[in-house]
Amino acid sequence: MDIRINRFNVRYQGKIYGPGSVIYNVPEITGKDLVKESNGEMEELPLREETKEVTSQEETKKTPSQKVKESESTPGGEGGDPILSPVDPSKTVK
Image (cartoon, rainbow, N blue to C red):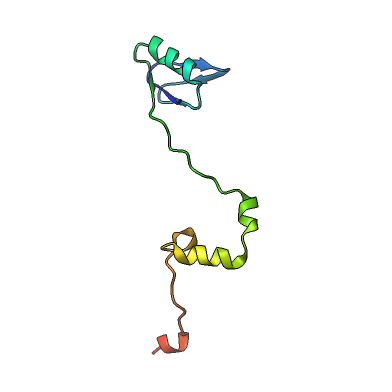
């Protein structure tokens, strides 16, 4: 559970959180009690969607052809740049 601090400073696990700060991964029971007793000074944030992080080990297991196929299948390729066809410089110069 994540909690946003709306007013005042809050000390939690040795760190001080000020207004606008977010305390991430608070145990459910502790978080519910903190929000309930805060009189609006803290609020529970909606659940975050878990994202899968690709580790470097998973990336190195892929063969170069797999990496190329993945970049070709996504619009824009790797890094979001558009895939451009090769250009012959002699044909472009007048």
